[in-house]
Image 1 (cartoon, rainbow, N blue to C red):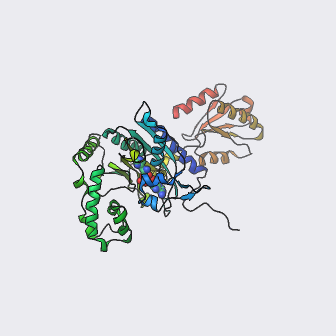
Image 2: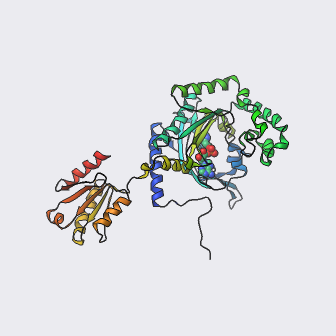
Image 3: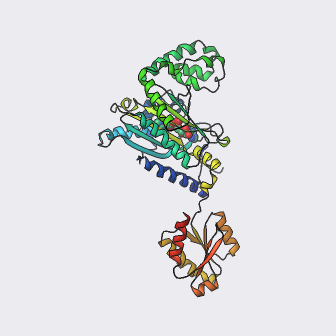
Length: 426
Ligand code: HAM
């Protein structure tokens, strides 16, 4: 029988990898607290209709990429391809609009599923961290959303990025623009790729970011979205830009940015990695405002804004730009008995360190000092405690700083001194 392997487009995260992911997730969770977001966990699968009605049934995500199945009672369910729909569903279902404290600021982190062709930075099971701010509309919140994403990016040491913005306007502006696009593209229907012929009927906005037709002459003269924005939307976008300017945030406005999900209105944005390692899948995170989504899912007339970042892509960029971030040791101290008589003493020391919340491990087998030091180096462990015959008899120990290559002999007050040294170096 053939060996069973993991499904295409999924990953096993072995120890070293999951350690790196925990480092990244800890940084994200710490940052999100500064902005007062709290975690909301929703199911991995939802009723298929939820995604059809929110993301949109003519989008690629819903029409081509969803993992949809029937349960034993013939209900159509889908693995979530994104997080916003589930959060908004939960917001409505639990009447969170009735909470005294508004807006509702939710974050989520977990697996999402899209049946796409796997490549570097693109998987079928991938992970998103996302936030949704649901409540009264204010342009400062749009800015805060972008800033939070940039803050995380910076904390991970990712600098090589660009911020791309656009405004889709309100519903009326969008409908007027859609009409103009259909009229324009109909004249060029014969020159369009097969996918675009279909998009012209189903989802004309997506004609703008077709990669196949991008260089064709007629693409240079397409009507511009900005010409169809009404005064209110124009002003909203101008206000957003002015705050970003005051904050000295660099950005580009891309009139052809439309995003692949149907629910957006006004502000949309994408943050792109400029690293070579990111290859073709360079969008680290994207998001925007959705003024009608909550109402369209039978909730009240409340607006929201959010983004989601692809964590596999963040990891690729962080490793390329800031590899030191992941050099954290598995534990702080490795205790090294030099012979079998010292092991019991080493074990007592290890236990006492753990009681003081110091992460440590010891060598239980007979190994040479060289082999134990190599182990510590491989695992980025910063300190060693070495115990031989002399130390055992005198009840002392050699405490070695493996990074700075210094050592000291410790006796009675060893635990306090070690605690102090670790704190000093943090
Ligand atoms: P999205 O642009 O579809 O937006 O996805 C957000 C991010 O998820 C992308 O920028 C990318 O980093 C990552 N991503 C998407 N598909 C894959 C894949 N197959 N493999 C690896 N990474 C992937 C949304 O999902 C919206 N819900 C964002 C949002 C939240 N808008 C408002 N609130």
